[in-house]
Image (cartoon, rainbow, N blue to C red):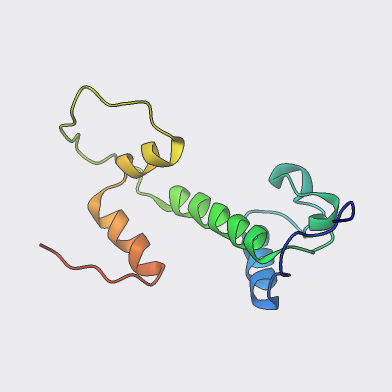
Amino acid sequence: MSFGQASGPPATAKQVRELLTLLEAAGHRDFRDARGPMGFTQRQAGGKFTRDEAQAFIDELEQSAFETEAPSVPPPPVARPKAVAASTPAERALRSMTDDQLVAELRRRGWRTVER
């Protein structure tokens, strides 16, 4: 693979449009403007992404937007076991979400949820 070349199929036009829309919502003018804050490579700053790269950035921006939309009133504390192994930031973020927030996010991503 040559230097600066993508290692996978190119992102769809829909993914690129969605990514640009999310970047604009986050306060960036375009891909070049978001290069530093988002950690884009020079190729990505030119609007060239693989499908996996585009999806990863879309997920990251959606998660960031979802976290900023969360209510400012914290949910009531939930009893948790004291001995919790070290966890990743994603696991900690999931634990801090209410059931309603998790259901809303799953439904937004196309999952079906059933109350038991």
